[in-house]
Amino acid sequence: MTKRIAHVDDDPDIRDAVARILEKNGYEVEHYLTMKDFIASLEHGGTPPDLAILDVMVESMDAGLTAYAEIQKNHPYIQTIFLTSLGDMIRPYFDKESDKWVCVMEKPVEPENLLSVVEDRFAHSANK
Image (cartoon, rainbow, N blue to C red; front, side):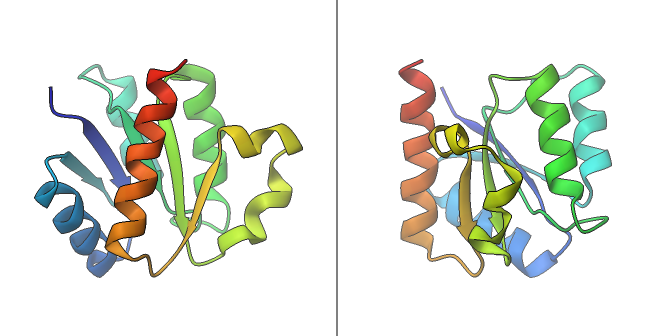
């Protein structure tokens, strides 16, 4: 069964690059320009994605972190990757235990690294 990935980023170049990498490797990708659009898609039925790739600074400096908290509360089974230019600077927003379940990747990302992390997240969720 094809794994579905939601990608939220307001940069069209990043969205296109991530989509090409993932779709070329058999994943189905849904794009969102804003966290509000993504959250609305989750709340209005439909099939939720298996994984979400979120930018931190979309509508505001911390929109990704705020959306993540809401996603975890209402859809805790959705694996999440933060793809952000901030890199590990966002780590202080999470407690020490979060290293097990919060994945942060810095932009720009190498295709092999992105695929490796996506596959690792799916393997992680399969072991729960």
